[in-house]
Length: 311
Image (cartoon, rainbow, N blue to C red):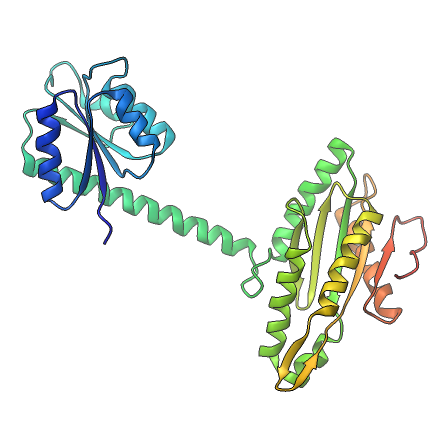
């Protein structure tokens, strides 16, 4: 198990040495700093789990100032100690962000218990944070493809429509369907079908810019939101995705190379239209690609215009 790192900050060299030796023997890794400025510099280098600091330090930064700075940056937990218990209160130290408060002279057994408790509480807090982040990720992510799911698609599309209206930037949408996917599943099995979905998701992400976003809309359907992108530029992106998948070779059976294709519908947002109308038009464009023979891109620019010829 990795040893926890503790920084001791005290302007008395002998105190630093004794605390470092004791905590090292207790299984921790320690470093010492003689001023608040030095302590803050070492902390910003990273890697410490806990700071033990005296309140009164040489220099401009006191132990309480150091505590507040450490906690505001979220770098470590802090135990504050002082030889002037009558001048400083537990409440004041906790109010500045300390996790515990000790009065000198220290009882080392008590210090060790406090150190272990603070570190354990830190570990539990980090684990809770990690679990919450994982749950939040699962709530918006498709488990198979690792793309965002349809629930997150509708939420994000609302945000992008709002930005498009506010800043008067174009916004385009792709709706993508893998051609004859049911036949592929029926012929080679769902596990091979899943491999196609996963690989296509990887291809999809590789063809997009950093501010674009891809979603598994459901089954073999996918969507892509293209902020600050007009219909013709979106058509270019769609053609790149289509061509990249067409060049991919799958091997669902030994000695049986198979190519898969997609049909894509492209449309651009028209100011003040509803989200539903925007998505429906992309779906109509995609369906036009299907009707025209699949493995192609069709564009419908606006409700008032006829669909552009499939490419």
